[in-house]
Structures are given as structure tokens and as C-alpha cells.
Image (cartoon, rainbow over all chains, first blue to last red; front, side, top):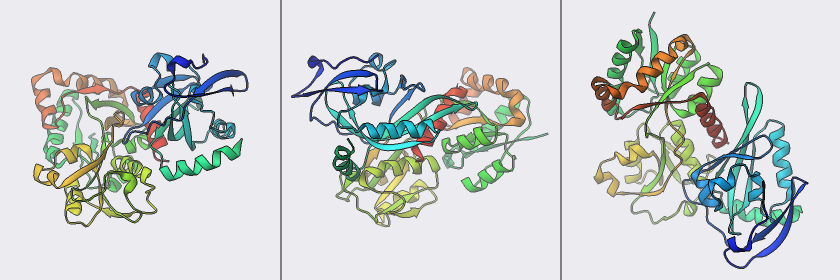
Length: 158
Length: 248
């Protein structure tokens, strides 16, 4: 379940856009220019079903996303989708993990309060007894140089 | 027939006798003959695992994937409240305040502990540092990592947090922590191999109950642990997946 973002949750001036998620869901997204720096030494960890529905999050995920655990569990991972992220990046992610390979990339994530945070994300398919049962995603602090490269590159991929 | 037990070579030397005491205790509790073999380094331990010589191991999380997936080991228990965390430290006189200010080519001192090294290198990534642009200073112990920093032979040291915290206050006064990991889910585990699997439940039970009797408590104390708790197969699979993502 994924809802439109609400103006009362947003901190600071915001812009509004409607995102098409998974080619079937429309979501009204409100976003600001407020960046939350990635904390040193922490990892953000989550697990999803093969369809991308969140089944597990760690405390760092909750703190950085601004959502409560209840809001996250059962929601599609696209709840973090920021309008500045080109759909091609996620297409590449899904194409890669659907082949059974690991995916790694730099991602600008959306917070509940409309702000954002950059991560270096790794997604791996969890295979148990030969079957895909879940995906695990681990995010770590990205290099600022790499983030700056993505800030220039991503707008060209739309 | 005697089974073979070994401990990840990154154990603290203070606990060497503790592992021998533990081995005696577990043999009595399970009525199983077990020989404790300590290896000096990860390479010789891995060689023994490869040759199917090991039946019981207190394993570094880095080796868990190989033990489970290639060698048919299963997790038994982990020490309650213990997790492997890493620290990036510099000489206290170093003016660098943040990893992002470290320059390419710096000398990084570390030990061969595989999980701590991996976590430490991840914490250097925000500074655009990786194996290709640092100068490694491989050290036998964490005390030597500290000494390299104090003597100016290394710019940055990667420590197991527990080992850093255990350094003398005189040494710590001359060092400064830049980053301390807060990962919480990476830990050593006691694991049981295929030849002993029929005794898995028995081993797990005596280990989980170990802190309930006085003798067991004493043995745990000699390892600086308070108790063991069961590690489910799912939890181990999750940690293996996590290590997998981190080694990319």
C-alpha cells in the first residue's frame, strides 16, 4: 500500500510531482531541497518480497527515512522513490536482480518529510534451496565525489 | 573417534586458556571426544576446513558463507550481546577530522581479520579510498596497528572495536577515533560440521543452558561471555547475504 504524500508531513518549502511507480501506481510526491547527511559507520538494511514489498527494516532505515516501522512494513520499496532518480536506474536494478545478479548503485532516496539522502546501495537476491525468496538491500555512506557525478549524470537519463 | 574444534584466529590472546577450558567443558557435557586445534592464521585454518578436518568452529562471519554453503556447516549459537564492530582511528595529533578529508595514498594499518578489514574499508569509502589507492600496512595484532599510528608509520588504523577499547589508556590518549561502526548484526558464531550434525540439538541445548549452572558460568567468564544464544538457520542466511552485499 502506498499513499500520496501529505503537506502536513513536509518540512520546508516543497515542490509537487506525480510519479508513476511500477507502471501502474500513481503517487503524489512532495519534495524539498533539504538533505540529511548519511551517518558515519551505519548501514541501512531492508528485505523485500520478490515483488518489492518491504518485510524487514533496521533501526537506521527508520531513522533515515523518517517513516515508522509500521508505515514501512508492507509498503512497496518505491515509497523511497525520489523524483530526481531516473526510472532507467531502477529498470537496471530490476533487470540485474531478476537475472540473479547483485546490483550496486548510488541512489537519492526520498524521506517522509520531503527531504532526501544519498546512499550507495547494494541489492542481492536471496536464494534458498534454489528459489528466490526475497531481496536484501544494504545501503552505506557514499563517496561525495560519486554523488556529485550522479547529480550531473542522472538528469540526462530521463 | 575424536572430532576437531577450532577457533577463528582473531580471538583475543587473553582468552586462549578460556577456549581450552571451554573445550574440556563441552567434551564432558556432550560425552564427545574433541580436540582443540588453534591455527596461527586464517589461511592455515581455511586449509584445514577445505580438507574437511574441522567439525566444530567458532567462526569469523566472513567465513560463514563458505562453511554453510560449501562445507555443510550449521550455526549453533552466538555470544549474547556480542557483535563485531570496527573503528577507524588516527594519531591524536593528526588534524584530520573526517574520513572525507583523508588523501589518496595514505598508509592504512590493519590486521588480517577479514570482517573487521572489510568493515573498515567500507568506512573509508566516503573518502574515495579503496584497496587500489591506499598503502596497506599489514600488522600481526591490534597493538601493532596502534604502534604504527603512534610511530607515524601509518596514517589510519582499522581496529576491531573491542580490541581498540581494550588498549591501555596511555595508548588511547594518543589516538583519536574518526568512525566507529554501528552495524550490530555481524557476529562470530559457533558452528557445527557434517560429521557432528546428529548431535546438533544436544550441543545447542547444553550451550544455551550453559549460564544456568555455576561451572558453566565460570567457563563463560574465562571467554568474557555472559551466555550463548541460539542462532537460527534463517539468521545465519541473513548474515551471509549481508556479508555478500558488503564484500561488493
